[in-house]
Length: 255
Image (spheres, rainbow, N blue to C red):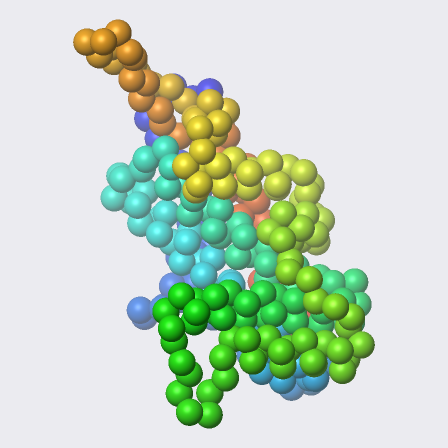
């Protein structure tokens, strides 16, 4: 393991890719699909529940996560946790976009899109219940939207919709990016451990730097990010970002 102060040179290709996408006060989004494109054909019967919308939003969220880490790094504000949690978000975002694009056929891609929309509206309904929110006149609740999505899935013969799990999305998106699913999942599990405040990642993927003895004899150990362990997560994010961009443009611009 590295014994030097945080360098983060392995992050530079990913940071550079995101810097190229920064515009004036916003990130440059993926373009809307061309009317004659294959992606537009996929989305044609889905109406407001198009895959393209989910992909574009997820892509932009991933850029924001990476850029937040870039700005923290520039400020010299690196802690043992944030680099993991921020890239965990980006990994999930980029993998989700690629997962939506890489179904084996048009039916599967539509099923994936509506499954994700269905879960999105389930979460929206939960929030509406938590906050006692009532839509404006003429608006629809999350539950009503969910019923509409499920009816559409039945109409298209897509079968019952099941909530996509993150590990499932990662495992299926990884091969589409030329990555090994188990290695991507391993990096994601470590990052998730930090995000949820678990103990085990501190033992497996951080580097002890110093120990301080307290009056009661208990030692406090200072932990820092282990760059050798964090590097695969950054590499996976960069690869997924590149592959998502390439796959989206290929499907959104070509018939």
